[in-house]
Length: 162
Image (cartoon, rainbow, N blue to C red; front, side, top):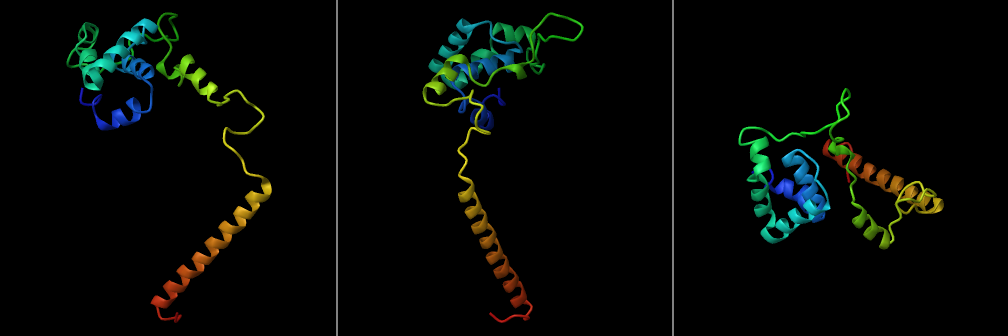
């Protein structure tokens, strides 16, 4: 409970995700399984929206499923996994996509194009000439400040008078 309500968990999980993704992550990490479907995600999202983060965590930790599987003395773990020798279970949670289809569609409608292959990265690259000018300015500035630093050190020893 303390871990799920800690400021770092809130900052790195709750504040950077939408409610649906946050609910999926909590179900995976707290109950040790993936959500059963969109209806379960929606119902837990309603709990999160109406009771807030603390109420959601309290309901999750006091649920019958959590108490039966983990109780008070067991750290939650992934309960259903595909093991090499068995074909039953779920894949690991690391295979979960960052964005669900609805959120990905929203990002694409805003102009983000995740399927372009004609550019090396998603970010704008300045023209080559501008990059060269920037490199010259950076090197010149570094050399200038380096000379000032050396001058100050030499003046401390009395070898140079500024």
